[in-house]
Image 1 (spheres, helix red, strand yellow):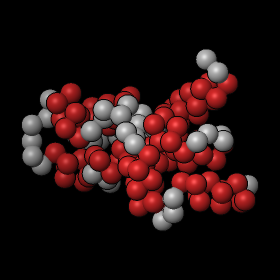
Image 2 (image 1 turned 180 degrees about the vertical axis):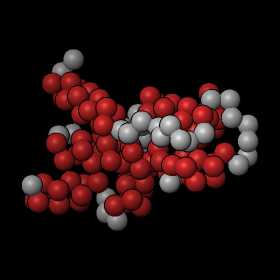
Image 3 (image 1 turned 30 degrees about the vertical axis):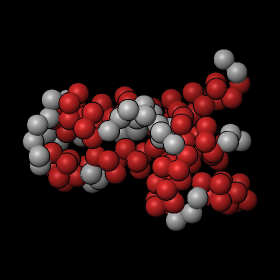
Image 4 (image 1 turned 90 degrees about the vertical axis):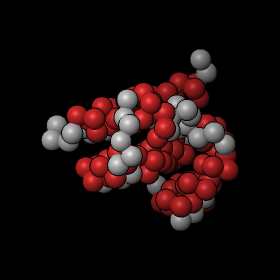
Amino acid sequence: MDQQQEGILVLSKNYLDELSPPDIDWPENIQIVVSCIHENLFDASLSVSWLKEKCHIKKKIFSACFARHVGYYPKEYILHHRIKAAKRILREMDLPVTRVALTVGFNSLSAFCKAFKREMDMGPSDWRKDAKEVA
């Protein structure tokens, strides 16, 4: 394993370790889904339909129930945490943006850049430049 890959693994693991566990007051199915998201956050196959199948959720109102308890719809929750993890990697490592995108679970650079810009109002390269100037 090269030094870059090792750095990515450390940053990714640290990010996952810092995530808050599901609230014990949430319904059990929501707790299970949040735990499943945390365990699979950087897996590109993670999606709401995958979660519903993996966690045996059949209710059409699941996403709204999830949002009521967690504060995000499931897809938004996944994207939010992938972007936060990507920001950490962008700030601390000089990796190509494509590698960062794939590392945090995006299937393509364009999907990553679109989601990043929607969340941060700027692209990942510009954000990295600004973050390094502030530091």
